[in-house]
Image (cartoon, rainbow, N blue to C red):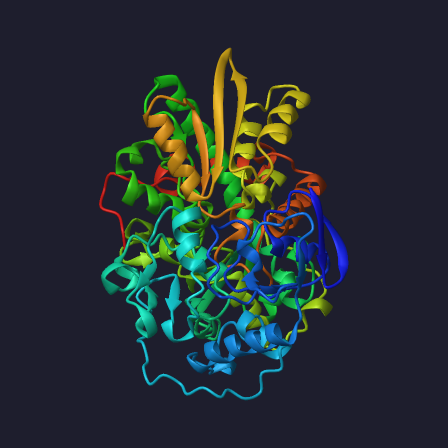
Length: 564
């Protein structure tokens, strides 16, 4: 604790870990490219430089605050240096901004505007890198990279994957996979967190909006869309709303205007997952085999397990993800229809694009889910069609696959799957017991959460983890015998699907944004008159009729050949 003098004003600090945070606390927005409080210190962009009373210039992100320290943030030298840095970055940058995914939301573009960069005095390097579109989920354009290292640190420190690193030196330096491989040939898990944190358009979602238009314009097809829970609390950010604002009714209306025939709720499929996974867990608990049970809703996590921990694949639930359950059930439901049924998923997740293309989710060469469009791509489609989103009248999901419980909706947040399954398992317990387990222990943004509850006299240990580096730590503790659980929920993305790689990235994504989006889902849950999955009458009817003895529609055999 102490006091600094910033631009002649006294500012107290207490717990801030560097000068940059104290400056921002004082209401001064120092620019940065490479600083993120959740990542390790890098200090490469030099945009956050400040000057002390002796004229010494240093980076504020890498300097500890000291009592009595006196600094300046806007001296002539600092202003000149920042402009020089921006000019140098722009001189070596692909400036085709109008065709860039991040136009209007690019940090380099924003700072160039803020600092009135009109002319670039430095010559452009006569060297172009090939665009890497080998991934099913993302596209890398090294020509737009500013070498901030955000993606490298995100992939290694938060996800524990390490698919990206710095290569070469000097003016030849670039970010690339090991041995300069294409990203699709690496251990990349398609989570898209590198795209979320990238301040420019160097890493983008693999845009498939043209495929969407081709499908909806084909009148020989029945176009069915499913909308994931997390989409409804983030899409509004693209239209001036706050994170967590609920726009589900407008999403349904917009999709109908875009040419979709029927719009259903992926939360309905999440209800199916709760029933199927609950039954699977009880069966494993009875036999004592393949415990702990890991959830299987997150394709990024499943791919991580396949590449990093293949020995635990038998422990992963055989249940398909809600997206894939929905696809297989819908295709079965309409199998005798005259029109060809096309399933389009609206997802917060780039890894869902890769999941839908896996061999085990195809029947006779036909995919259960034909196309995956991310939240960001849906915003592009709405804007391209000239739809004034904020003026749309709310519409409801179509039936019979549009009625979902609150338990299905909260799948979009970390802890949501575990909460829904536990609610199902404790359906006969007093309500206060369930709330004690769930609200106190399962919700929130802690990296690893634990809960203990009782089923028929047996103590059940539950864990919830998000961010795959945390998952790796937890699995290693289990293998070492330091931890023991019966059921574990894993989400690849920090915060869960609400912060997936396909969500809007028009603002810096941190825990506050994640919390606001998650709170939006919990508000929907509180307002739902169907609280738990087994209370959904359409789910009960489906399991008694169409899904009876149809294990193949809801489960996948992980022992057979899988992949892409």
